[in-house]
Image (cartoon, rainbow, N blue to C red; front, top):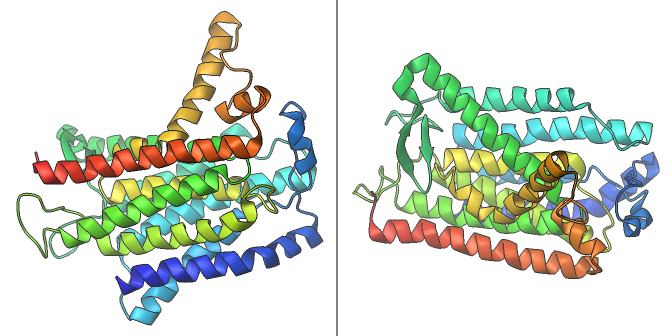
Length: 360
């Protein structure tokens, strides 16, 4: 538990104190946000605001994770390292996208195929490695099952080892692409994606700690959890929660810095990584319900326009629809945070209710 608290505290301090220094660095280099002309006109005042703040979130999380293990003299785990690899790898893809936008002063960074290719490469490496490295109880960081609050009966390995691996890799890619792009679409208003991410990572701190306390290795029984490294996953989630919390101080309206694709892709990837390694893959759809709703608004908008030539919303993603409807940005963010909190509460409630009722 000390490592969890240390990770949260160190990442919070690093992010809170490091962000203003990073802002000064970005300003000196002229790394300001490019604003699309077809977006809400109120956003034009944000042109030039420093971006790529996600690099600070990633750095603070990695340093806090390392510090927590150093000060508690505990070894790192494969599960924790893999989730951090997924976060950093997708963050690198986002960084390249942000850098191209800034350096060329355009709204298009990496081309779609390049961006998708980078995300896919990182996701495939993560998925393949997550099925390796069994511990002394033959547990690997991930298993070829679809999970909700624990593994279900849907097993990709039924089709054989190779095909099962391919199916799991495809499933993991779908999850990682969904969460990373969901956070990316949500990151359109000051503090919206950051504040929501704090709640989701906080929920994974609680989930992983609960799994650690009810782990089959230390507390065997019908209700125990077969998760490889739950305590270290709680450390990872705590580090991410703390770094997002500290960053939110500067990212809240009026934002002094944006996380950019560097942050949104990284945070979304970390959520998928935690979901896969804690075996709560479908639960993340509920915990991150706000991200799902905003992603669906884009899918509905595009689908409706292509099929009927009409738009369902004034503008997608959903937060911009309410902006054009006359809602103030801060009002939208706070109300969306409330919705995000309700989804997180529902997800945690379902997780705990399943344990109370008993494992199926």
